Length: 261
Image (tube, rainbow, N blue to C red):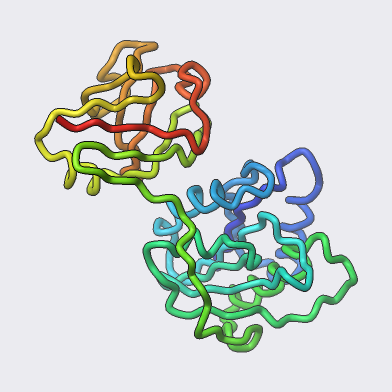
């Protein structure tokens, strides 16, 4: 059975998600719709990038991913279709692909050329992206619904860790449902720089620091803070059975400093 995933900022209060799914099922009843998240902060393509980037590789080939964040159709906001890792990604040309494809490039990229069947421009994911997704889910080719782009400007707008001789400055990129604070440095890079040296991870003032990496959250007592690499190998600041973001006063785009000695 074909798979279509949804990553959106639509929330679950209103009828938007139901309308999106109804549009998909009306076009293709033989499809499995997977909700990746509907709780992306409104218009936050950085958050949407992190959520999808950390899970898309778990899906089988030919999965179609719809990303609905800031996707209103207008003269400056076209819609794109990318093919990467034997999967399809559909979204507005609003900077999402610049963030998503910061370390790798799609094998093919298309501008979606479907004509809208209605004059509703505010719900492009329903009027354009679901049609494109269902076409692909039935085995259709991107060339039928899009024009290939060969010179797209991937301008590398994602935030990278800043590395000096004795320090790393990383950035908070995501707060998960538990209040765990996810930074933009991954395990391989951390280990290549720090190695066997001693370090301190500062997450606020020069007094607040962590000097070791835990393997599991229960390595520390309840309510104690820790640093850990999550399932996607991003460095997290967490509190065992507590909300680190709230209790430590951390938010997205805050700086986490790692001092190496």
